[in-house]
Image (cartoon, rainbow, N blue to C red; front, side, top):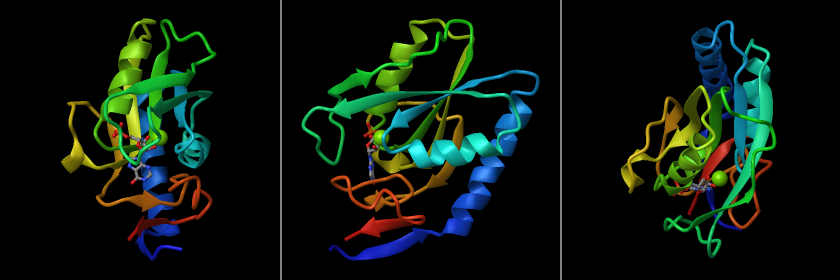
Length: 170
Ligand code: IMP
Ligand code: MG
């Protein structure tokens, strides 16, 4: 097992998720946005965020993979599970674990925009902005971070997803 170093504690994550949820609750007052989680990494973040948003949200998921299953995207993103709810005319908030190069989120935004939602925003738990290769707007950012992270839904070769905190791997 590789050495892990704590980056974000349970409390830090919990507090920040609550703040993001409050911001979203305020911004979408009187509306019922659809939260679209990107599988698999965002499943825990989405579950916590959704339960803190005081609005009648709807939930859906997409699954995106990068060819080759490497630790990074190279722009070759592919959709393996699409949204199931109709999104035309709806307020959409894409919920992502990490935005790294930006290719995954850029691909998804383009894909969703074709269906003409009323609005389309992004909420990412972690922004690794230094590594960005394509410009993307992230409307709600939990934390800025760097290094390879695991825990709270994030994996390395399918390991560590269920850790309640976030760690860097050596
Ligand atoms: P991007 O397309 O380079 O922005 O990559 C985003 C995707 O890569 C995320 O949805 C994550 O699943 C994965 N990813 C990027 N950085 C990490 C990390 O540090 N740990 C685990 N997964 C990561
Ligand atoms: Mg992901």
